[in-house]
Image 1 (cartoon, rainbow, N blue to C red):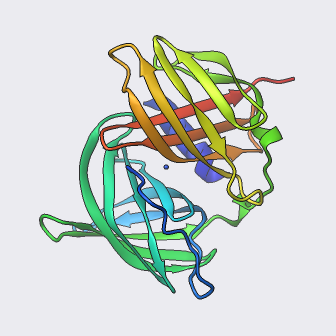
Image 2: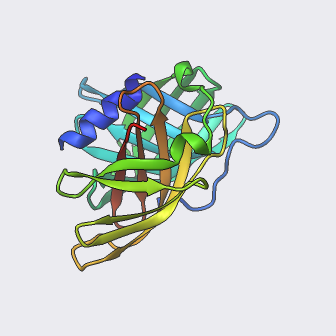
Amino acid sequence: MYFIKFVLVFLTSILVSCGGSSGSGGSNNQSTDGIWSGYANFSNGNSTEILAIISGGEFIMVDSESDIYLSGSLEIRGRNISAARVNQYEIDGGFIMYMQLDGVVYSKSRIMADFIDVDTGGRVSINLDYLNEMDEPMSYSDLSGSWYYQGNDGTYREQSIDENGAFEIFDNGCIYSGKLTIPNNRQVIFTTEFTVSGSSWCKRGFYTGVGAYDYEADPLELFAVGVNDEFSKTLSFLKIND
């Protein structure tokens, strides 16, 4: 469970305008769906850890050192993958810039790709390995019930997710209303969409993204990352013991 533990520790210390999903359809196309971890390697010889959740071609990646999310929609042709627009965001912050992606994928094994700066042509290479341990069954009963949601001020408050994955969160004047959807009940990954409304300081708007469920954590944990053209937002939960 390295990915989820890393991301949750990282986020608490501080999944694009997603567009249409290309998915991994086509019998000759490799699959990118899953959770991946590895490194981004820069031209100056430096590298940083990078971790990714991919579902239906839509992805969220987190760079552990630069405090950024990367989000986009993959086109998959055989082993070749590309994304015409990869948005970069501050974590729980604003849009920074966009890049392109070009590379190859080997299902449940390896992704090798380059992020390309559209202005300068500069490249950052990534190498990601598939985390097989994340291929575990998940159902809506795992997601539903009472949780502690981590608010904007870092405080956990009791909230609930219903038996269909729907939620409505009230957090210091902000309202997050949406749904978690399980696209593949053999992986601990879900997609999400939610609307942020409320006070003027809330990053209001419609968000889409992906998330993951940590079935081994004690207490149980889940998180989702949603993005739009302007902002990124993380939803982080701890399970209330029955």
